[in-house]
Image (cartoon, rainbow, N blue to C red):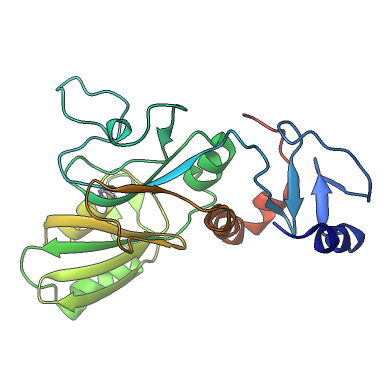
Amino acid sequence: MASRRAAEEMIADGRVEVNGEVAVLGRRVDARRDRITVDGTPVGTDPGLVHYLLNKPAGVVSTASDPQGRPTVTDMVPAEPRVFPVGRLDAATEGLLLLTNDGELTHRLTHPSFGVEKEYLAEVEGTPTAGAIRRLRQGVALEDGPTAPARVSLVAPGALRITIHEGRNRQVRRMAEAVGHPVRRLVRTRIGPLRTGTLGPGEWRPLTQVEVRELEKAASASSPRLARRARPHDR
Ligand code: URA
């Protein structure tokens, strides 16, 4: 993440920790086992880790296998090393999905206490009124509890941009339904710092080291207290 000289400065400035202890110059680490952070953000040091960003088409399921024989997201990326989706999109939902063998990052992105922002474009039935949009923003009552405040805007008649940081089952569909505007089409257009860009439906690309770091930072930013707490390496 930095030149040798810059890394030494970071260490000298006390910004680097190894397994929760402030690192000292010359200390040896095992890149596979030790947990290294800079300013509380983990540094990806394991060369065996892969991270893919997939633009999932509708009709593809987010599980590793499907009893109904539908195509799965893991069919759309390289088979080796084996990767798993980070959270889920409904079969009918399109858009961005991360797949990785990075258990640490998966935990950080899916644990309820982190909550990286996810942005969706929802085509809905009818055109929500200002009142309906306000309700979506403030939080609507769902059977598993009220939703947290969300950013919601009407981008065209019948089209909402909705940004949430929870990841409850079918959340956007249930929110829209709760205010009387069932979703017709749902596309996830952003996960934290990652946007669709030029990735067409069914296409995937590996994340760059910088993007992995930005994602980790986004997860840390959403829960600084937890993110800074040293946890045992659990891969
Ligand atoms: N909200 C939904 O309703 N479905 C998804 O797939 C993702 C978020």
